[in-house]
Image (cartoon, rainbow, N blue to C red; front, side, top):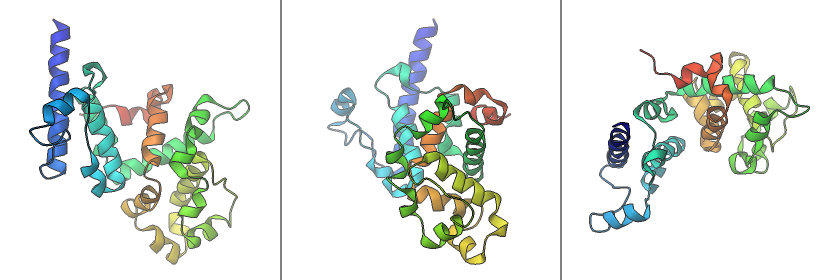
Length: 225
């Protein structure tokens, strides 16, 4: 009896994914117009370009809806997983998650290198480019370089820079504060606009490992009453 129920729920998740996209894009369908829709669903030919106007948040919307529209029913998230998706997190929660992740990565073994650090740097060029310094303002880089050196190829070093400036935000010069924006929305957006894949990449590393069960991350993966 369990299997049909699971299938029914998966069909509901698929329909909900279509509805999410419809609402967010003011009436578009992820599988095109009514005449080609059924064929596109069978071919898994979806188009989520309508979410591009949301910028960095659009990337998280694409991630959620793509999962909900998976052609295989068993690959679709359940309702709890949908509700826990970071698309629904506010800026404060997203920023705190990145800070927690950075703190946790900092205490991992480097020799031999912890598997999670290897995962964090896998595909780094797609996340931060060949040198993330080039995407940041000169004023910020000058302030950053006063205190330590950072590897512009490293995801962990970009997280470290974000974390350190968050910790010392109140001590920053006023012109650097204005550049970064207010906490938490402006500060987070300063980084996510320049590195739209950063958040989901870090979230994916935590989610796919045992780290998600640790006390500092558990609340991100549990629904509160």
